[in-house]
Structures are given as structure tokens and as C-alpha cells.
Length: 201
Image (cartoon, rainbow, N blue to C red; front, side, top):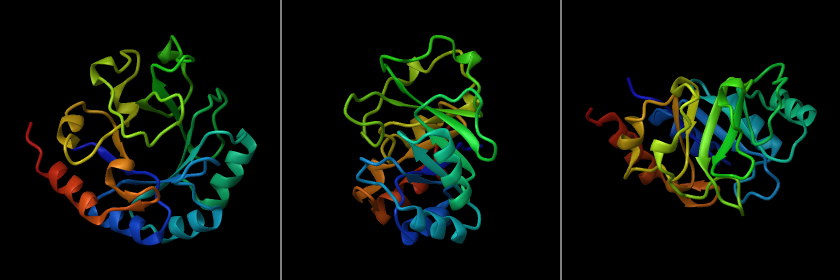
């Protein structure tokens, strides 16, 4: 059984519906203020309402817990991917705690983290995600159940099958399937799902 797939950095309805039709399980909206993939709440709400099978996930960096919950409710988000740790979680959406492997503030005990899922990405001191950098998957923390992990960082057509063999809950793609930040490349999206559906092993 293949892992689920999250296509992140979606800013328009066309890209969202194409990703969903190809097999994306999650559509990611970036609300981080400094991101070139930032989406407006209005656009995210409209896109989320148009989805029929994929679930909407919001990506947050500097937002407070209350503001995050407000946006999640307003935009009909299934999940909240946040780079801040909130041990109390969120009332409505699933909480995906985003971690960057090698970051100075990485927790020591992953088993004690109170969240529904964890997204593990590559560390870059200048940006929180969408770096296109892959980390050594053998360094995935042993204290985390892979059934709770969204694997991110430089995933694309060239390594999607290798990533699938890591048997994490979901694979997270963004910059590798873009024509430019905020706009997906249809050919790259289609190639990802073609390759994933034909993986061996």
C-alpha cells in the first residue's frame, strides 16, 4: 500500500484539482507571511470547498494558536501544520508538528510530543520549507512511529519510489513539482504519480 501524498504550496484552484485528480490525499496551503507560496484566506477557503476527496492542510509559522484555529475553521482545514509546538493541540483540526532535522531546537524525546502527526523536513536557517533539500532518511528519529510521519524535503519524480519505501504515513512535495513558486508544473505532478503508482518493492 502506497503512502499518502500531500502536495503543498497550492495557491490556485486549477493546481489543487489537478493534484486531487492525480491522487493527492492532502492539499497544502501556506499561510506563512514571508513565503513566496503564501495563499490568502479567501483563496484557501474557496479551494478547500471545491475539494471532493483530498483534505486541506494549512501551514503556519508565526501565527498564534488562536489565530491558527480561526483560520482553520474559516478555511475548512482538516489539519494544521505548525512550526511551533503546542502541547495542548488544537480543538478542531489534526495537529501536524513540523520539525526540521538538524535545527538547533530539535526536541530530545520525540515519544513525549503531543500531536497527531509530525512532518520531518530538511533544516535551512533561511526558510522553513520548500527548500528542495533532501536529508538522510536513515536519520529519521527512532522515537517516532512512521505511521505518524509526513516525510518532506526535496521529494520529486526522481526519488518518490525510494521515499515510498521508507513507509511513512505520507510524502510531502512542494518545490520539486513547481513551474515557479506558487504555480505547479502539470507535467512534473503527473510524473510523480505515474512513478509512484509504478514503484516496485
